[in-house]
Length: 475
Image (tube, rainbow, N blue to C red; front, side, top):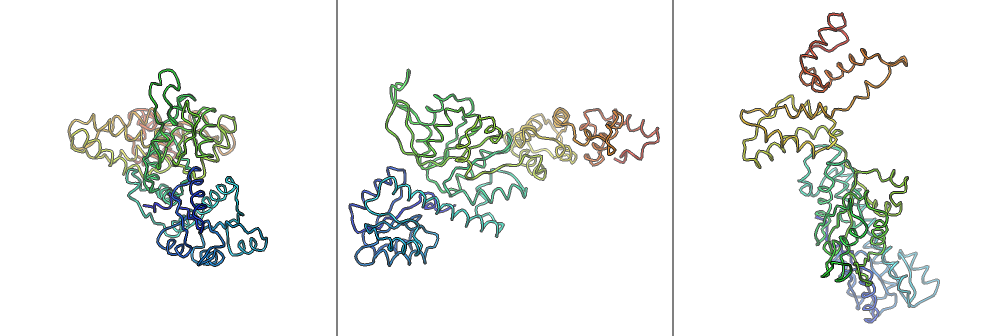
C-alpha cells in the first residue's frame, strides 16, 4: 500500500525557540494539520528527513550550530520535491530574494499573521501532493504495471479500459484529495471507492453514506451528528459519519441527488475542514477524505443550477468514469463464470455448464443495469436450475427480448436520403440480428423478439421471392 506519510502530510518545524515551535504546532493542529514534527536543534534536521518522509519544512533562518541559510540549499538539493517555507524576523529584501532564488516555496516575516502562516503551509501541502501525484502517474504510464492489483480483487475484469482505470486510481489513492466516481447504475462505483480507500493507507474506516432522499436536516444529522437536546427527541448526543470516518474515508453515494442547502454545508466542510454538530456552536475539525459517486450528469445539473459548480470543482479534483458493461463485452465471459460459481456455492449446488450460445446472446444485450443486472440474471438462472449439466437460457432470453433497444442502423435512412420502407427495415433488421448472433438462428430470433419458427417463415418467404442474396441464411 501507499506510505502512510502520504496521507498524514508530515510538517517539520525547525526553530531554536521552543515557544515558537509549540505555538506553531498548536496553530496547525487547530487548522486540522496533524503529524507535525518539531526540531529545536538544527543539526537534527537532515537525519530526520533521511529516516522519515516529510511533506513541508518550515525553516527559521538564524539558528545556532547550522543556520537556515546553510540548510536551505542542502534541503533543496537533496529533496527537490519538498517545499521549504522560510520564516524569520529579518525583513531585508535581499535576504528574501536570496531565499527564493535558492528554492524556498515562501518567505514569512515574524511575527506572522496566523491565517497567513496556515494558508502558506496548506498551499505547500497541496503542492507536495500534486508533485507526488504527477510522479506516480508518470511511473504508471511508463510501466503499465499495477503495484497492488489485489486491492481491486472485488472488481472482476479483464478489460484494458478497466486496467487503465485501476492504474489511475492507484496513482491518486494516496493524495488525500476528493475523488468523484461517475458511471451508470450497477457499474461498481462503491467497489472502486473501497479499493481507493484500501490503497490510501489511511488508518480510519471506510464509511459509506447514500445521500439520495436525505433532506437538509437529516443530511446534517447523518454527517455531523447532534448534541443532546438539539431537537425534539434528541435525548442523547450522537456522533455523525464524519466523526466515524475520522482518519479514514467518507464515501457519499448518489451525490447528484444532494439538496442545495446540503451542498452548501458539504462545500464548507471541504473548504474549512470543520463542521458543527446540530445544536452546537463549537466547530469540530475534520480529517476525513471525501469520495463521491453519481450516475447523473453533473454538468447538465450545473447548467440547470441544480448542482453548485464550486462544489463540483471541489469534489472532482480527481475524476474516474467507469465504463458500462456494454462497452467492455470482454468482461462478460469472466463475470458469468464468476457469478455462476458464486451462486452455486451460495445455493449449495454444483455449478452448471455455460452453454456456448449464452455468451453470444449476452454480448448483444444492452445491460441497462450493468454488472449488477448480469449478476441478478445469473443468480436467478442458477436458482432455477434443477438438474443436468447445462444452464438453461430461458430466463436470459426473456431478459434480452424485453430490454433490447432498437439499433441505430435500422433507424437510419437509406444512402440516397430516402426513408427505408417497413419491408426494407424488417429485412435489414433481420440481417443485422443474424450477423450479431453469429448466424445462430435461435439467438437472432431472441434479439428480434420473435419465435424461431416465425424467423424461419420470414427467411423462407424472402428466399422464395429470390432475395436470398440479401439475407444471411447460413446458420
